[in-house]
Amino acid sequence: MSIVFRREFRAYFATPLAAVFLVIFLFLAGLFTFNIGGLYERDQADLRPFFQYVPWLFLLILPAISMRLWAEERRTGTIELLVTLPFALSDLVLGKFLAAWAFSIVAVLLTVPFWITLSWLGDPDHGALVSGYLATVLLAGFMLSVGALISAWTKNQVIAFVLSVAVLFITLLLGYPATLDVARTFASKGVIEALASTSALTHFDALMRGVVDLRDVLYFVGGMIVFLWLNTAVIDWKKSD
Amino acid sequence: MAKVVENSARAAEELLVATGLEKRFGDTYAVRGIDLRVRAGEVLGFLGPNGAGKSTSMRMVTGFLEPTAGAISLCGINLLTHPIEAKRTIGYLPEGAPAYPEMTVEEFLTFVAEARGYARRDARDRVERVIERVHLQGVRRKSFETLSKGYKRRTGLAQALMHDPRVLILDEPTDGLDPNQKHEVRTLIRELGRDRAVVLSTHILEEVEAVCTRAIIINQGTVVFDGTPTEMESKAPANITKNRMDHVFRMLTTGEGERRATRRTKGSTR
Ligand SMILES: Nc1ncnc2c1ncn2[C@@H]1O[C@H](COP(=O)(O)OP(=O)(O)OP(=O)(O)O)[C@@H](O)[C@H]1O
Ligand SMILES: [Mg+2]
Image (cartoon, rainbow over all chains, first blue to last red):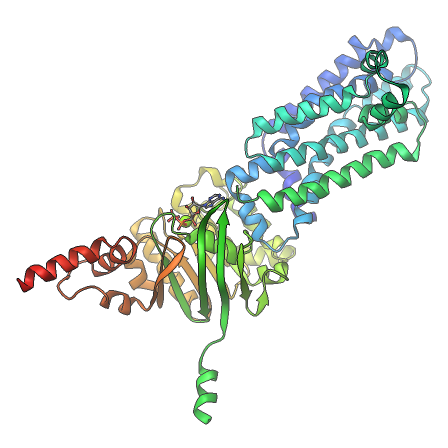
């Protein structure tokens, strides 16, 4: 598994695309945090604006990473090589996923200077920031695992991208306060809560607020395990298409 | 009694045994009931028209595709129940010789060496060896996507030889090579075949005469000929003098050669 991981992780940096990607991410994250989110105007020493926008930023950016995971492998035919090397299918799935996740963590770590700026300007609640970053990293893994599963399904990267954005958009919307307010006008409270609890955004918000509840962590970790398991099954089934 | 023992000792072990192989895609059969037995020291030429099921059969014996029915064993290991152990015994050049486009030849081969379980130093030694063996010295630092077709094919071959496998499955190993490279690769395959089981698919019938000890022709997923190249050639009617192998191939896979042959025979008797 570590062999697959290393090959994949290096592949991200083999082209200038990785640098472009990281710069765009950092630029947008900065824009959302400082300008649109108004970090300075808020006069509060926290990164709330960053954490509030990061799920939506991920929505557009992570599917661009996950779309190529399997679709590319199928297009070039290298999947035939991978599958006939003495690897377990689950090692391939895990190695590829972890490389994508690690790459997204590199992107997230590039925003740590925001935190440093904050400590410099004021006196932030470091505990809340740690849990905010934990939430961000878990959300990235969760969203990538969904994208990887969709990438396993299709040979076409564009389809993989669009489908991943669509699916992830729905799962974020289900936890978005404005959607829930609309839903409240016609659905019962129980239904609303059940719906919201399936959304990644709900669990992300809970963690971001600084209360690390094990159930929220389990939601993300459990989700990743389920999607990666499904990923293995789909690859086994559709590898030759 | 002594004779029997002597015979079985002389007969090389069967390294690849596939029985009753079948593969169905949707409701069409790509392969229907193929048996393959290849011993060490044999180079088996796998022939057949486009779409006959050659690649599909190779994909099954290398563990890429699960057969719809049938059993496969490699060096005595059941591929379907012990896939990882069985895959260790084979080297495989998939059709079209795929590799990661952005990696250099050296990086790609190192990845395969590591995947085959060799660590740093061993991996480097292995990579050096195969680079020398298939003459890739000149392109080792080039990225795969910039290689010419022939060098891509050779990189694929190098990758398949990495761990000195006892079973080699090569899907069109000489496709796209120039005459010099073809000659080189054929010499290499003959050499490899001395103590290994080699299966190669090809559309070039001279290649069968040049390197194979045995040939199998499949058509529409079933075996229509199994024998030595000499036996194959001898199936052609005596009045055919040129391209006898091609004639037999057409005869067995289209029936066309047969018709023409009978016509000619009739003509000559008339
Ligand atoms: N993944 C797949 N899905 C559906 N049909 C397939 C698939 N792979 C192969 N086939 C079909 O199976 C048949 C055998 O194909 P195969 O690639 O094994 O032929 P081949 O003998 O290797 O031909 P060629 O000489 O052109 O390489 C063909 O009719 C092909 O269309
Ligand atoms: Mg083929």
